[in-house]
Length: 375
Length: 166
Image (tube, rainbow over all chains, first blue to last red; front, side, top):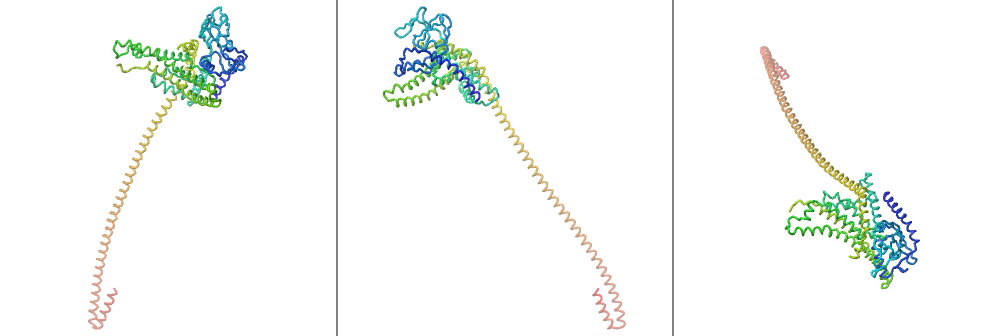
């Protein structure tokens, strides 16, 4: 219990530190292009709001009071690699602008933010020009290493994991064989990953080597999924870059730990006519290098994005159905449906973490398998 | 697909890889290694405890079997001892009986012999007494006869009366 209280204290301190930035952000004069001082109440606005949420953002936004134009949010650091080298500043410099109106002069380069992406204006330009499809014509994307909301979410998750599992590990080191506090919840989960996911798929002899990766990825995805269900509005596992990075980890791990047998079976399948062997090799390679990681990254990304989309759309029912059903009925319907989907999403949050870890260990298991029988 | 590619942020991808690597390394050092180590130690401990409990159970069973055996042996010994005692008792009684019988019959025989000899002696004494008496009586009778016939008869009667008293 003491450890749990400590962790909560630490988190509280962390949020307070960022809370100071909130005050700073509040004083900014808002310059919002697409919201015309009203509430988000038309289907188009709702749609763009949802789209905006599903994307990564450069500041941690809680809500906007559209009547006063105040944003309740705190800025996050922007770190970009521009033509002039690495530039860092706080995202409050953009003043919540997301349409390319606010130009930030960061030591020789002019930067602007359009739809959550940071663009560098071509030299000599002072304003962004758009074509018909609203694509910037005189600016190019920069490589963005910012601590975005997703990165922030990952850091928070990492911290939660280090605190929680660190507490569990310390408990063991102190000589408690039975964990106390948070550890009591976490230990069965660790055992679950080890005994239900890693052991059966990878095999008794070799599973130990991959436990660090599998456990980290499992809890990372699960905690991020759960954070995504909170009103804080993280959508980290719904970012394709994040899921792609994790899928590539799996690929790299199973490619590098593949046994001789695995490569023999992949590249020169025994027991098959020689003419077919190169064709099979291509199929197997494509399967291992492209299809399997793709199935991993798309499944997680699509499930979480769809979950967020459905939940937000159901919340928006309250507004979109008000005209036809009246405020009470639309709110009630929205509440019940959202509650229902949220319960399912809680399950999905675990399920997707489980499936990702399960498939990763299955693929690793395929790569490290020893074939006793040579056909 | 275009939308997906557009949404793909290389920076986020890079950050995720860096964070994940650091997280895996940190978690491995501070969490997974000690946790998994402690879990496997605990599992081994439990396995050992179970094994030793099984062993103890076997030992207990052996001990019980031994006890049973000892008990059986003791019981058999007791039986044997009782049987022996009973036999001893019987033989002792039998011996005593035969001895007593022998002694009794010997005593009886002795007594009979003694009685017989007494009887014989008594008879001999009686005979000699009777003979003496007869001789006395005959003498007296003969003397009386010579003096008085009546007196002789009275004498015989009185002598006979005396003889009866004797």
